[in-house]
Image (tube, rainbow, N blue to C red):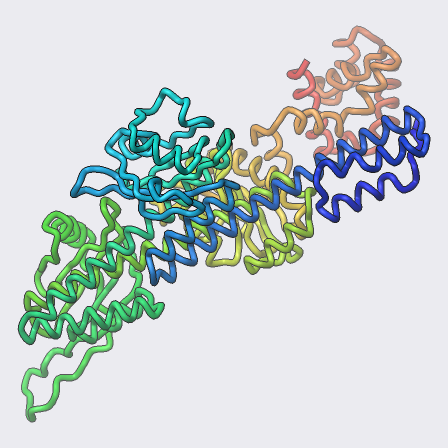
Length: 640
């Protein structure tokens, strides 16, 4: 029985949601109804409506906060990509930490390797000079423990928390600032802790896991900014050293100035390669960690003719420098990293492009004439600049890949929550969700990195969830898309990759069902022994259902679709049509043998089959239909 509500009450709650009113204001419609003499049942109904409205308000608030966090990470990635002033970037990160965590104070400390302690680098919201001048010995206080262990720590009441080593200086500074709740996460470069990022409140409060994860992300961006600044500082220091040397060194310094300026003006790896090949006069090849070409520039003199007749300037070859043998390149890169400088292998000079323990690739250079020591230093510094650019590129790419993956995850997990918002987010990434797309799922080990690159170059999305990699790609042929993914991924990764596909889909709501079909298709391909291939669901038919290791309700749905009327008839009337159908198929369609098996007269079997025809419709004895029925009978018997 439906309860009558005051006609304006639901609209009042909608108005409160639209106005983003405080939670306390949601009591007003109920108070108004109570004053107007509403019945207890009406008040109870209003109370339920209020609770639903508050749930919607909380969901909208979480979404708004998530969007703010992603926007902050985007802005931080942009700051890194256009790094000019390290202090400005760090101040922006610390301020974002304070804003997003709704903290009273945020601050950053960095390790002082010379003094062996940690000092205050940036503060936001701090008012106490004693706090801003703090230095923390290793292991002392919450920050010292984070710096020592490399593990995040949080406390709702630092002064009363006995887990930390309290010192007079630290407690005095924290007390002067009035801090109570503190969260600290490490700034890491690889396994090395270089500092700590904090958020703190002047009242007790817990810190949620989501807040810890957000602060860890901001700390990672800060660590990249600090390391990037270190690389720039080292490059500029090298340029200053070279400027004080002889003419060759001055030439190298000018080259470094040129490359550094190029980077600071927004130049990329291709621009650095072009200018370096021109400065050192030769042909340059930039490769990634797998030996794949990232950029090529420059040219070499063509071989002199066997019998030159006149003296003339040597002609230049326009051919791109070919990559050396993979084994030779790998040995040269390893030697360059070990020696910390470029190495020579025949006519080639190889400089490793690395950041800490991370191998990013190499510069392979063939000069028109042997390089001087100063020229080799130029090549090596160019390798450092290239490493910096690749780190920037990776940071921005990872941030974008995360956003694209989250969109795909929402399309699969929450397709009906807000289709308009999903379309808007997709449009910002250059996707039209109402255009035809295919959904692909790979079976086996996740291929996240490869899939993100593959999808991004084709205007699609990629992510990994529950151990399987999923792609959403523009197109209308799922089978062809699956075969392309399986072939290209298998070749790139050096191992078989199986891909199932479904679609085409148009609209956010169609992605989730297609994802389930594609996942079943991938499982079916593996079960059929077709590892390393790709196919669409329409190419497998019901075999995908039976072999795809799908959930139980898929099998029961198949049985119900084929035998549902017969099963229901037997259950309602206590008849035995299902065993008769089983015996009929087992007897190869012979009525006499079926009657003998059932211990009934042939006419009885015939009458039962007539009833089955009425229930299933004509044509159930045709080969294709009978095969479906026999499979359904087998599945039904196994499920009992």
